Length: 119
Image 1 (cartoon, rainbow, N blue to C red):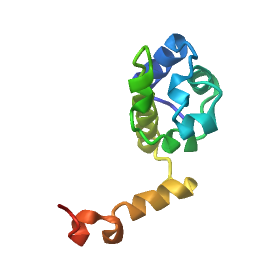
Image 2 (cartoon, rainbow, N blue to C red; image 1 turned 90 degrees about the vertical axis):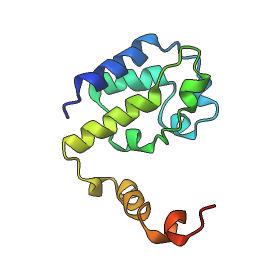
Image 3 (cartoon, rainbow, N blue to C red; image 1 turned 180 degrees about the horizontal axis):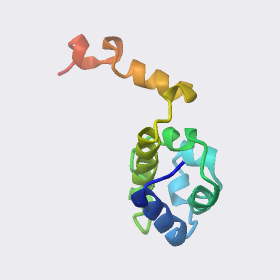
Image 4 (cartoon, helix red, strand yellow; image 1 turned 90 degrees about the horizontal axis):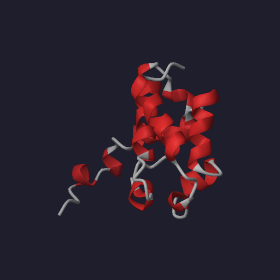
């Protein structure tokens, strides 16, 4: 997988700047599941890559940035990884949960707008 210069730079910034304080991990089940600390996770990404399920498991909520004393944008880095994976034509069928989310998120059954539940 060839990641974009932007993605690599974002990952390098996090890998080089993160102090491993783990404040971002306190309330993040995603980070708790996939790493010991974000610095190591981004170092791993730079050295050997990550399983595509990792960036797709981040909820992109931005809570990590809010609690980070350095305001590191982990969510934006994971989003950039996703964008690169799609540009490289990663078939979503390889990520069953992502494929299911993509299908269900546009379903009228799961959309308040299409059901008329908006207020």
